[in-house]
Length: 254
Image 1 (tube, helix red, strand yellow):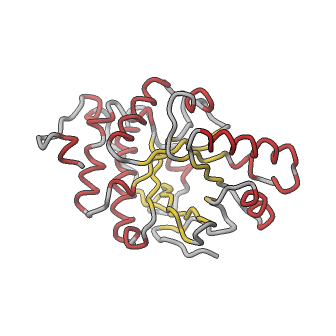
Image 2: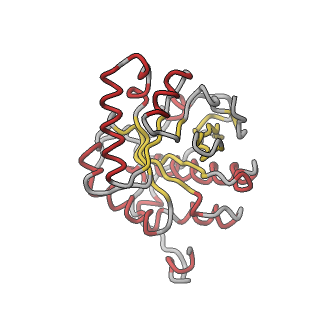
């Protein structure tokens, strides 16, 4: 797939990819599983940035600037793929979910080079990579669409993260249907005791099913929440009830 997409020639570098001062904060990844209740197996592991010195994600992200965000984004991708391979994720049959910053991608077809090279180096199948985009910045919808469409054509899986809480939401979904939508944890939290959330979730699931998009619920913390979500038809769930993120490890389920 890589050779056909690149035409077998040398990968080009865009000007934007060479900008920035580099990201000089040593990082690693914590991994948190997404559990599939229908198969009783781990569906994917999400890679979550952490500092090698124990720094939290918030502390690391606070060091990201417009000048180094490309370097940060690329470092996260390569670190996640390399570490996941070392930990045996491929042998487990799970996907690797990587968060990316849309505003750190200048041209998706050229900025993907380091990702492909890392996957090739450790023999990590690119069709087992799921890209989630983070809505923590104001987004250019046209640019985001271009990124998602390019990744889709290249065989990567895609997901909208925190659906219902960010800048894109329904407008983006009407123009591009990813493989997965991760529903904002605000919807799943206390859903067992909040009838309004149950109604909202039921209709959201019906909409996603009609679009052939698979929902994932994150932030699931109690057996009661997990049961209601399962009864509503959501088999892919993530949260502390299943496992907390583990630093540089693939955690076992509780």
